[in-house]
Image (tube, rainbow, N blue to C red; front, side, top):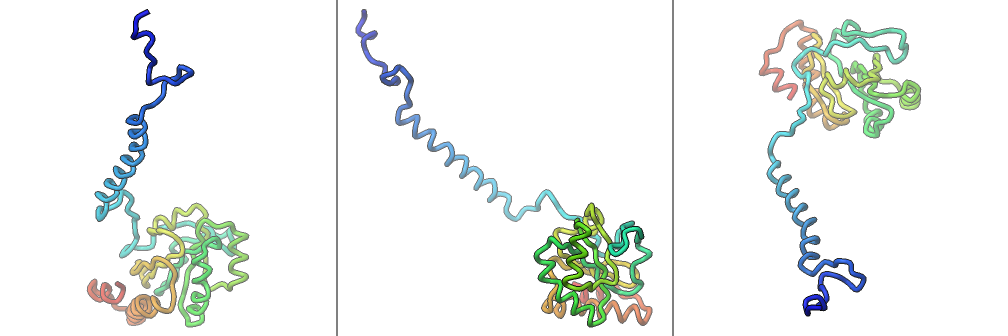
Length: 216
């Protein structure tokens, strides 16, 4: 037997199984670190660049065509023809939505002030929607049931609650993401509604610069 045959293999343990040396162990520990830094670099390079998903919006266009059940009587189908012929707020809400619950008392205040609100009940169970309105009050002149959520997507919804300010001609003039409260009502929505209501009452058209300033 040659001397080489008697020399133990350092890569094997006493049972004859191969073992990793220190260099191999270091490489295995470095792999997750390399992957992590690679992801950080990719994310950094994406900063400031547009995302692949850009939500559509109906801003400055007519309310998208719809045929949806009336929430209070689902045997009746509502269309654009049933919308108010004066400026109004179209509010997308759901009983499952925590921010909608926070917003709801202010919507009740707006109803008391004479603001016309149309509700879009978004992806909700009808029983839950009724319980929600029975407990908190119903601020809407009507609500339609958007069970599939397609109408809300046509509006450009990114997440409930959202509100669309519509003029007397059925054109969406403002899009409020998130809850309506006294601050954004006074700062953004009320000035827009005032201009739209004045134009509607006086039967005059507003130019784009007036609308841009009032309904920014």
